[in-house]
Image 1 (cartoon, rainbow, N blue to C red):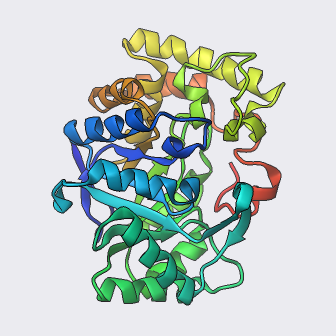
Image 2 (image 1 turned 90 degrees about the vertical axis):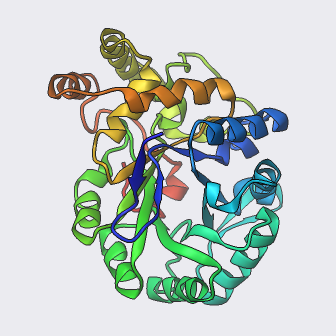
Length: 331
């Protein structure tokens, strides 16, 4: 497994990370045994970075990971944990909470659920508009000094917020959606990260399944699947977006790889400071994703990929309108 360092102050991690959100109902029902087996397969393949959130499945995801990681050497994996996204009964979202007192509370619960003494990267899931980012990061800094957190990260914030947070404590990485269909980070966020020496962990590298090569026109999202309310998957938009995937498949075929592998390889090729997160829920999908790191994209390959999926060509927002205002970049 190749390694990459998150920024100038962050940890050295596997060049591909495992995003665990889908293992706790975000895309419909899951198989717990298969999820645990997928975590084990990822670790066996050399994946060390595992990403979760305390609100994934209302704590279910952290408990799942605790079971999967039980008995393993703590320095054999790295946990990236997001916090602060409030949820109520029925999985109703209640907005972010970045108060210093809430930071300590969320972290305490996560440590117990995960069964660990510290988390490697701790980050607010979204910016709390009612709390200065300096206060939120300051509270995490106290947890770093106390030994409960190793590094501080951010998630879905704009370049100005990155600068403000980094002034309080060095930021290891920004987690943000980045794929061929979502390239808003390229304008000012990615240059700011590189200026400050901050890494990026990219989620949604397969466009929540659109770029996987396994979604087809007429496919209906299962009950509880987030994609059922995603604008990019609505009638009219999804057909347009899948036409882009068809064009990308021609490039993948010529390269001798799958569409999913090509999409992951493209993200990884955008810089050694970027670590793609793959949200594999099964060993089959994980096995498909892993070879992407061995694909070398030439200048000609990159040009063909850009031609197939030009910047800004995706149709539909990446989140429902009610959630778009909380994102660091819209597309």
